[in-house]
Amino acid sequence: MQYKLYFAIGIIFSISGFTESLSKTKEKEIKDDIVQLIEINVNPKGELHFIAGFVRVAFHDCVGGCDGCLNLRDSNNAGLDVYVEPLETVYAKYNTDLTRADFWQLVGITAIERSARNCRACIRPKLVFETGRKDCADSPDYKGLRTFPMGGGHADINSGMIFLENAFGLPRTDPKLATALIGAHSLGESHASASGWNGRWTQNPDQITNRYYKNLIKLRWSQIDLNKGKPGVDPIYQWQPGKFHSKKQNIFDKRKKGVMMLNADLAFAKNLSTDATGLSGCPVSSKCKDQPDTAEWVRKYADNATLWEENFAIAYMMMIRTGYNATDLHATTAP
Image 1 (cartoon, rainbow, N blue to C red):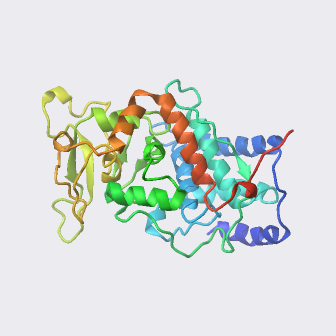
Image 2 (cartoon, rainbow, N blue to C red):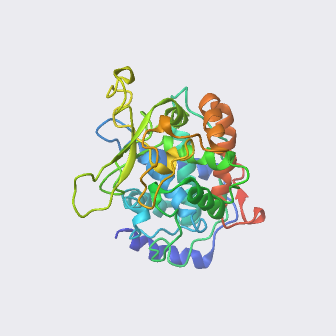
Image 3 (cartoon, rainbow, N blue to C red):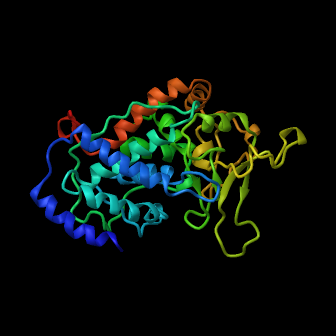
């Protein structure tokens, strides 16, 4: 892969070290290059799909500690090579200024900021970029495995909450932060070629709005098996709106077309009672009981974007500091 060239260069600078902090001028310069990369990559629908991809890179790198390492052979990271490869061309310009681990977190912050541009409904969380993260010895060509939620998109609320607590310190006893972080799914979409699931969580997957929470509670969801009728393959369950309901649902109108939820999403709103394959005991969401604790926060964030913005910022900052103490990281300095 192309980034192996930059891996060799990166070893040299990991030996010589980096400055403790970055100037705000240099931070802006790097951000401008990241935004340019976002804006020149437009999908056929006219959407800036690199926004969600860059946030996903930042998220996945922090599983097991934010250390500039992603195993692109791991199925949990399927599709990330599409974003990592072009990012390496940008990082090559700045690999004497910051580690790849720091760069990838600046990439995530920049993508979130760009998603809110010219978007009145978008949140603008206060995310502070800090330097001081260290790259693992194999960065970026990591071959080890990190622990993701059991079942992936089929995960139930317990495995999802345990993962978020163990990975990022988001407490199960106070689920407002975990429920806030999952709202990052307002960005992006799933592709069958990468994960098996297919569709987007919101109607505008390059804008970070609380539409994700509104969809969870205001649409009536039905569980379907994308592999139904295909012999010899495991089921792939996801939820689609209105498919088995009345005409009043205006089933496949433009607002709902292509929108979906995974078990891991709907489990924050409803008690799905899933089995080992992901099949829900209540395949129509209106028949499912509310999920204790987290459903309340889903409703709050659907009704109050400012509250979500505040708690998302807290949760996201906890995530991107994973593996480090407060004294390890340093905010950018003037000028």
